[in-house]
Image (cartoon, rainbow, N blue to C red; front, side, top):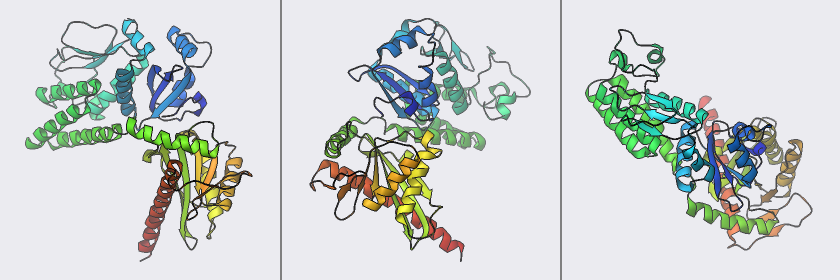
Length: 422
């Protein structure tokens, strides 16, 4: 999670954004396909929405959490709103202008649609949400579960299915491409997603997959297997959402590190670089990312060094750092609170030069192996921390992970080159 950032610092990635009060408590939580675009929209003038005006007037800090997909952002948003009950999210409950997601379980062949009010009709309602968020969510769930979005009620049987079936976005219940029981079970799985119960949704899909396989409906079974794989990936990612014990442990070490190296704020996001080669061959570099004291592997990056043809670690570091902060990655990933380089004075000098060329200002240090001394890009003398220092242990862990990642990437490329020449 990022703290007290400007909208311009946000990445062009899906995720959840949090407007917070002076005590750090969320007053509004939203999701976005692009965090940068969505949050920037709150600050465009003139502001015509009373709700937006109130949020902008009362917030004191901006945070965000990156998600791997729009659906993951939706699930995380729901989880955090239930956990924190932000003031301006709760106010939506009393505003009749905000729509709901409706799954019409009272019908033989349920639909998923957007409505403006709840009725006592046997359907399931979720919300209220902002209109754009509802439309995006309906598209995501319809795409995941192949639910029908047509307006017919009751559904008319046909000889030929519509285009949605041919582009693999619907089970085509209108030609009985799926049994009524199976289709309703899939609707129930979508409902569990909206409730935030991912495990129940996966369990329901597994039962349907087994049933389809037993009935020799292998195309259906394959589709269901793909849905299960996607949800299990989301379930795995959800385990990394804001685990308090892990973040607190990382914050203690980060606070100690900030004090030791003279930072104004604790470095929550640290990016570390290392290079690897064999006698100047197959030169590569790695970047690993730690947030809250733990690796954020989704943000790891590999670099095949192009400008260096010999064993020049300094030039390799320079290229990798420049590409990270000057090229396409600059807009795709957030700027870190601290950059860590594996090495000593020459390596940190190369990184300093790259950051200057990239016109990126970010705190920079390096950590030399064996001596475990911290070097700075300015005139400050090297810093030797106690061997049991939490700050040093954090830096060593990050540095060693960058080294491991670089060596693994280099070994992979070296093996491919070797076997490719046989």
